[in-house]
Length: 201
Image (cartoon, rainbow, N blue to C red; front, side, top):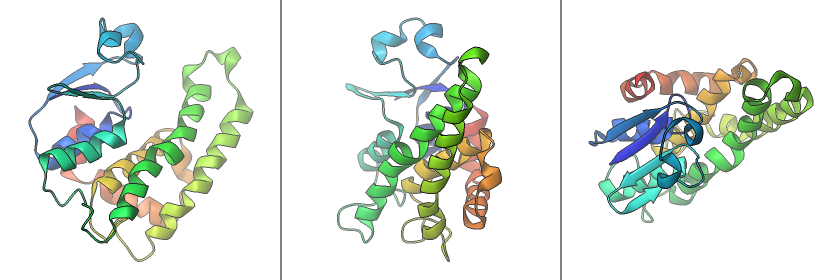
């Protein structure tokens, strides 16, 4: 397997998953944005987005989907639930919510605070989408009431996927407004050896 990665980008999700599962892979480190900095990247991923996972004839470009793929293709693993497991629907919901609902508004905050030239930065967009993200984070705060993890109180790919969103929020300064359950959850996740290893690569 090859994982095309930019430091602290969404590719950290599958990289963390690979480390949690102890799988063999080749890591291709790139400078963001790779469509402009890594020659031939658009031939691998025509969208130019990060990450890209290539596994034989299979190419994936969605970070949460990669987490699900790794658990299902290279399991069985306690990190991935199956249709016969209690909490399977909840597990899938968190996997998809992690990016579609939580990371999406953060990308707008990132764009209009760091990536755009100064004259194109939009404080109102930053404020609006910061609040959007924090409002939707209430679901995580609620799910963690009395629990260490999101599904069946067991660490799964759902925690990898959602945990990355909380970690990205920290890099944007949004963690100052995290509630206690989310704060403690993030600290538990980033203390995991597999996360520490993945984040250092």
